[in-house]
Image 1: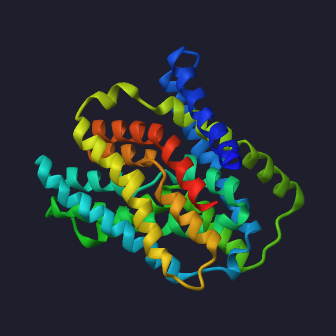
Image 2: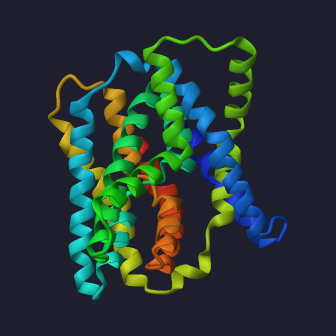
Image 3: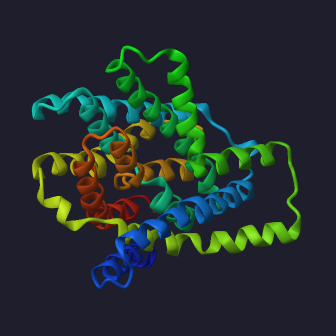
Length: 308
């Protein structure tokens, strides 16, 4: 238990520091957005890139692992989508609602947490989950957008999916890391050292930036729907991931533990970005991100206590 607390307390304390910095006006919300952008585009990709290379991605791909995880992701998304009818949500609102329940915060919490908890061996399964989840969920959401716009053609659909997929810097870092790993390309030592130095600062800056971005006031609105997202995201999602891997064979235990921790993460900050882009369900998404991040300090700790 002490080992888990030694891992989770510092991480969630950094999120708390971000909240305090914003509350005391030491860092404004606008500056927090700049810090968040800096962490997401500059610091986290090198962390992911270097970790995947160190984990020898070329020898450890598993389609069985990805398929099992995505079965649960798709199930969570569509169950939540259907539940949206109970709240009289429109089609795109249901889509963002489902995204809140199915899309964990890999970037700001998942990458640093899994690597700290399980070492560089967690980087490859984390990368596979990140790639598959992002592609599946973005594709599904864009299909709903297409359904509402009869003038949109399949060519535009493909372009939008690819644009949003490759616009994500973590996606690019994963793709480049697999490329370097498969071709066994050695990185020039000064460049490798530079990447390592940048990566070493990613965890602290990303978590503080996440804390600054949280909006406590938004939680007071539409409590029922936000609480439902919280229960599905932090409890149902990891439980289903546990059971789908419980009877699996020939899957590295570290990969299974990484999958369970990923499923227990709070709602991804990117969900709010997408909600804002589609101009729907954005206030609820902001509240869900805030509430799930706060409660995840408890649920992630419990999850790690069960699997470590």
